[in-house]
Length: 225
Image (cartoon, rainbow, N blue to C red; front, top):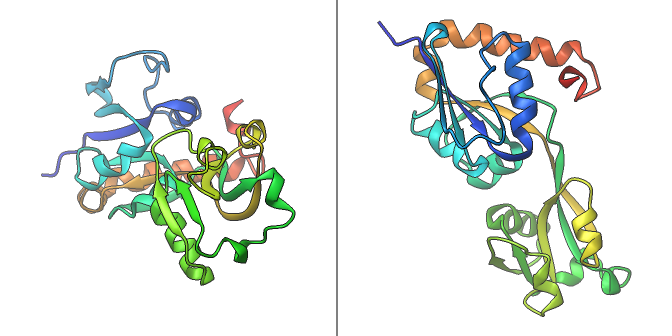
């Protein structure tokens, strides 16, 4: 008989609290989960549920290899990593978007086509390369791992590709969005084998998540109140 215990990978950071609220509304255990805790594993044997707390960028890997049956992660991470996982539910929170951004001083003069042969700094090389390739624009993609807003100001690149939510960081670094690439929200993903072997337990839970979100209509954060 297949194990019925579920291991769910929960993301650190801004997606953590809305994810915990979703678990609470779905009737899953949540009482000990705290954003500021350093505990990484929360086991609820009575409910046959275990949570592991991960960096958002690591969650697709934990799910792909079966260390977690389910995970919550942003669509931006799914697109960039292209892991072999099921994407089950758009959870509607954690909205952000991929953008091409350039220095404000050149934004009025520079359309996207004029970035041909430019250097583009990004933490998302797959997304950036795919976007410009589809546009027929040849660029050199430079992968960085943090503070990519710095790259144009020191001459490392002419543009960046990054995710933004409010746009405040871009503005504070004299950058402006030139074009949107993709809008993203948090998604529920599953390991392909787990989804088949634990289907009888996973299917009702997935349907409950969908129902919670649908019942709250267009207000994506309503169920968190």
